[in-house]
Length: 249
Image (cartoon, rainbow, N blue to C red; front, side):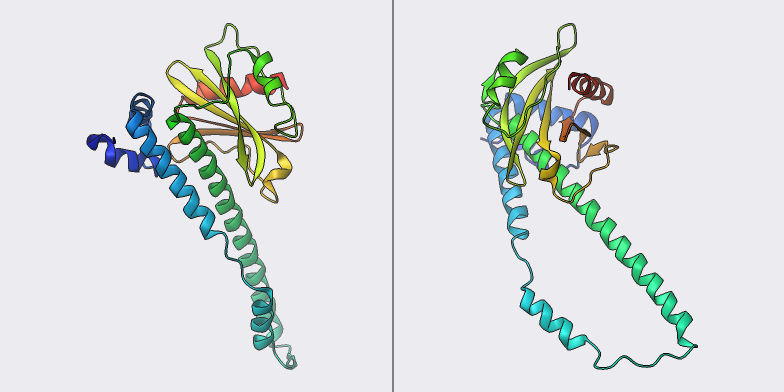
């Protein structure tokens, strides 16, 4: 059963409206309250279902062709020298608009991807069984993925570091399988996602991405793989784990 005092905060947390101490308080509550954790997982799944449904409609090519034919001019008018500067200016504006539209679509694609990853992270936090292979031994976790994902990766040696490997599971992005590795540092949980670069399609992420909603995010590409680290830990902790992962590859 959802705690009434946490209902509004739970909505704000999932919508990315909480930051700092408030976000950490909700995260800690989810780890200790089965009712709120289950409700959080249900809302994340509903949110992802709505997003998926909104992407299923695409314009009919025949309809697009009819519209283009109806607005196409019958005969190109003869242009005088007076109109040439006007036409040049118009072309510049069209090109600038096309570039702006492309960048806008790129940003929307990046935000959608990061939203999906943070949803997966929240779902893991709320799950009673967050990992499929439970082990602190990298030599147990890495081989478990063999045959389940179409690539391999290395895990760092965490001895004498504040990080603990909890295990891992298979996650999906754009219907392609990848690895989700779960780490803990003090009382915080970190999800590290690993997918093939080609699974991102035409999306080109900037490695400088630093945050998504109320979480810190790090991403980088290495050896044909794209890594994402998502958590509410401090930037310094997240950067340290990312450097250890990069050095292990």
